[in-house]
Length: 453
Image (tube, rainbow, N blue to C red):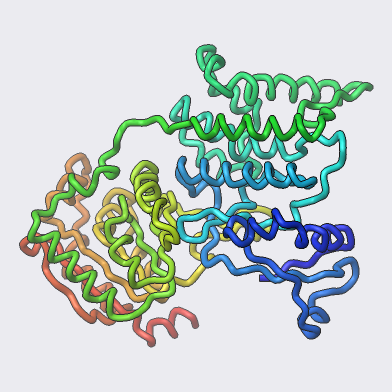
């Protein structure tokens, strides 16, 4: 991963890389490992015009976005950002951005990736990234903690985050007395509205985040926000899937059979990247972690995914990155020309996909034709361990209970016929007295070639 710098950014980089605090942050893994690229051929290819310096970064195996993170992940990412800013200010530097996209995940550990965001602190400057930090970190955390509002759709629809004036519409009078709401949402929104009104006249007024401050004032503000965020806790009652480990419909023998099937085939080789689709609280993600370099565990239940993150967080280094995503509506290409933020399907190529007890939700709950769902899985080009939940299974019957459509094509025979046209079925085994069946699938080379053509 390479980055080109213009003259000013290059000057800042050569100063920054010699500072002890920056070197210490890189050594701890808080900042992505970065060095100046010295190979003449690469420099000649990359540098021209205004670009005069070339950096090489440690690659991040899987790129994720803030609207895919759980509450605890966003909180930890915010605290990492503030901790880095605090050390920068103490050493005569600052961060010119407050973007959540400057954080990525190395397994279950956040890492800051935008080294060009550092610049020397100038006396009198305020924290220029304050507004952006509020919109992308603080406001989503406050709305979730105090109002139990799912802010992910808001942040996905507006890549700049949640504007203070928009956030104010979710706030009640009682909420104004909650810690952080009055100063970072209410006052922020009012000052922003006043600044916008003044800008439409003849005498522009500086918004709050542009008021001149000393370095000590800025540092105290950053430390205060960090203390605020550390005390925030998510609201919300337990969900069906957040306690899946104790509420699943398997008896002990059937669950053991399922676990042994997955374990037998996962341990057969080393997997660079595994997707666990519909991971719940990550039972099988954790099972795979010993045999995989990286695991991306995805579920639409935010509390279930948050539970997985909290459980794996003490494991350092951890190789599981949990994400929140509705698989019937995955994250799309977004941003300028659809190229700034890649869709889920275009970000990486998994080597193994776990798809356990998911297909009935996709076909019955989301009304996705079984062939379409299997084609979507097939297009990743990965080995697949898939559990088919049959029409007689109690969980399938529960999904059908209040539906007029009986999904006549949802049978094991139809599944095997469709799957067999795309995959080689290398192994399978019955589960739950035959009401379910688990499969090991390998994409057929001929089908892959046909799809590519």
